[in-house]
View (cartoon, rainbow, N blue to C red):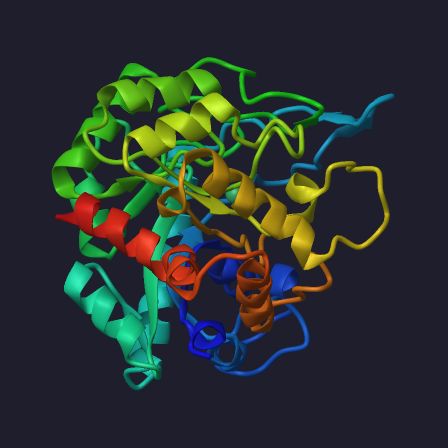
Length: 352
Ligand code: ZN
């Protein structure tokens, strides 16, 4: 019975933002077990969380999400663009916080920017690998003049957009039912950013990007296409989920889809108040595996950024997710691919 203890590499969490904004995270510390939030060090250990991309997401200031209920679901306006200067300062502060966490961790949390270090972290039970990811590239100067500095601070993954417009492109607006084809694609600066990321060995994350932006990246990028946290549109017709065509493109490039645990992207019926069983999450994993192969699906929880099924609860629920995947008929070897090896393959290829 090796599988349930497989350490997970998780494609996305917002834990740093919870820690950085006390009102959002309840003022908790990463090193103490908390009743609030979904990831802290004690719970990560208990859940066999080996590492993941830790997002730096810059919230809009004084913005209330304007959600309109419709007959079939809901629509939301896109939040406005945010200023580069504020995004830059916020991002530098959050990156500084992560490096403080590493310094205070006595070797148990490592900011990892090198493939061999990542592999070693995942092998050594005591260590957690944290890789900074920019969820929306607002902190990157439009002329890319601070990209080297961000790289030096450990950033190894950038999503050109979150669900709002910026200098680099457009994000998907949240709608149900809806498709990702909501707004235009990359700007010229966005194309330059993708080329620069390819060159430096920074992963380009396609979560939150529009159909047009996805196609722009597919055309330009020389690396595998990666969507860190999303689910399957054929199962849940929310605009943030991936169409069959996009899933095929990801697999053709040798990339992967990290299946999100965000309940609103998993439920077939977003109006249903019923708790989603873990099998409802595994439906999305299985769909991608059946359609294109088990090599192209992984996990991208969005812990601390989304409501996850109660049956998962928090990061301590990861072994239950793996157990449910195995119960669905995946072999131990396939569960290992989904849990970490697919992510490792894509990261190795991208960071080289
Ligand atoms: Zn997100």
